[in-house]
Amino acid sequence: MELMAVPKKKISKHKKGIRNGPKALKPVPIVFLCSRSCRRVKLPHFFCCSGERLNPSEQGNSNN
Image (cartoon, rainbow, N blue to C red):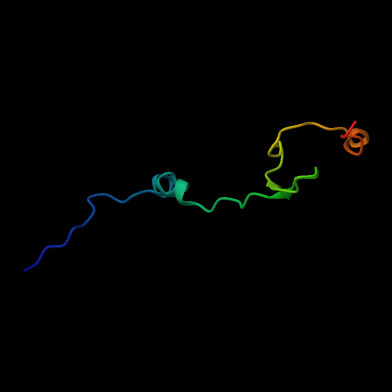
């Protein structure tokens, strides 16, 4: 006669939810193109590759 593993006590929904919480689906991050000349992909609220801050009026006059 074979014996199988059986839990001693019922696991409540609360405990099961705590255990399985990290396994939940995470939201997909939104990706933007850098609005400056590099046009690289970046996450919102992050600087682009160079991290330079240019005003829109200064963007055209960068060679002066």
